[in-house]
Amino acid sequence: MKLLHLSDLHIGKTVNDFSMIEDQAYQLERVADLVTEKRIDAVLVAGDVYDRSVPGEEAVKLLDHFLSRIHAAGAELFIISGNHDSEERLNFGSSLFETSQIHISAKYNGSITKRTMHDEFGAVNFYLLPFVKASQVKHFYPDAQIQTYEDAVRCALAHSEIDCSQRNILLAHQFVTGAGADPRTGGSESAAALCVGTVEKVGADCFCDFDYVALGHIHSPQKVARETVRYSGSLLKYSFREVNDSKTAPLVTLFEKGQTDIELVPLKPLREMRHLKGKMRQLLENVSDPDDYIYVTLTDEEPISNVMHIFRQYYPNTMQIMYDNAHTEVTSETVQGEAAEEKTFEQLFSDFYRAMYGCGISSEELALITELSV
Ligand SMILES: [Mn+2]
Image (cartoon, rainbow, N blue to C red; front, side):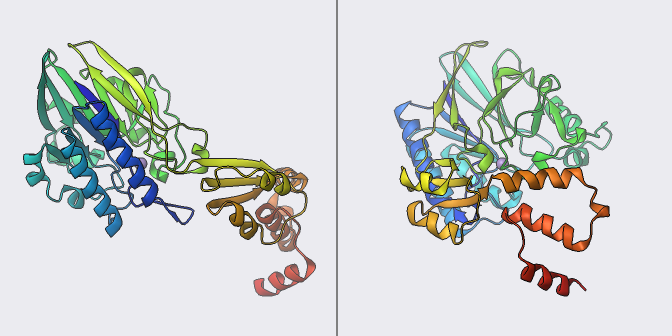
């Protein structure tokens, strides 16, 4: 049996004011093509289907189209909610979708949804655990000792009667750590995922009953503790910190119990996200793939006026321009070297201005800001 693992689609997301919808539509078309080409039996979507709890029209239309394409390709579809999804909205139509082999579990109701498929080696059980906080599980098991997210996940799994002689797959959307090591974040996760306390962490050893664990939440693709506990990573690069990631989807082939093969299938986007660093003149002399999403670090010593306007004539999808030059280096040293409380308002504001713009504030601007501050 072949499974394709996706997560963190974040349909409807904007990055630096650029709508990602066209890129997401393209990427989901490629995924649907892949399902046909590779004869995938089931597609797993491990949460953060939408970017917002109230998705926009285009986002809803795109998910609708994706569901029909996967269904037409003959694969079953398993979807859980992530922390970005609204439980109720993602659940819409789910009981009716069941008749079309589309299984959505967006809301924890005291037991984990289980669905079973069969192949020549027997049964494969899919457990769909939507994103849960400790309090949501505690609500159904008030007598259980549940303080952390790990307690919650353990309690939910303990009430699932897992038959370990069969093959078992889990979908979950949590911050999962392996042997004390945190997963490497991509940078476009929500603040909740980027700075987690020990309460929110779930140890990968909770999942020893599962032959494959399809995780969502962390946007960089990676395994956690073992090859068969994985974050697929987000559908696309959604932040500057992800420019060097290559996005992939794990294609998991299940043979008899205990034999699992994983291939990471590259997902080539409509537009790449890239980081260019150098002097403006140099960068604009060698323009390639102008439709890509571009982050720029300029090493020019003098600030360039209208620099975004200039770059967008060559790279219309320029997302952000930063400076890295002698001024910015001096700034970071100054800020670290001197205590803020010993500085006057004018000095502090001048430092701030330099940190933001990479150059000194003019005396006219400083006079104006001083006047406004009193
Ligand atoms: Mn996410």
